Image 1: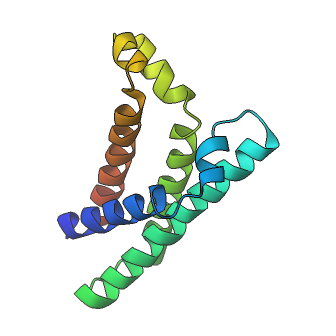
Image 2: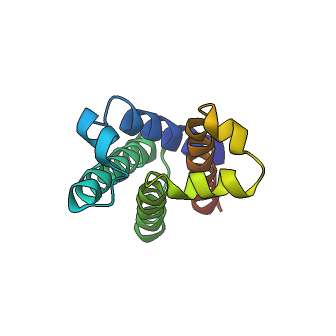
Length: 130
């Protein structure tokens, strides 16, 4: 069950991060402004909706009986952490304090960003499969 949940959450993440993210959200989601927060929260909401929808479909198709409260907690965790990671400063801080400054200067932030998101998805899948 863990693997199926993890794959569904990963697909939801990919759909929300790429075809589901508007150009406006991508450009403004890290800004320190009301516009930045609106773009960021709209993008995070897309993650919540798509991951929630895929878990619902997975439950129906695969016959899972995921309890509603833990599933809601997992999906909200994904949305909240996605919002924080996408503010960009946590990734930049991590890279500057773990010996990755050169990698940061050469485009590595996008990879560290995605690794952080995947770690969150795996944690959510483990939580739901337990």
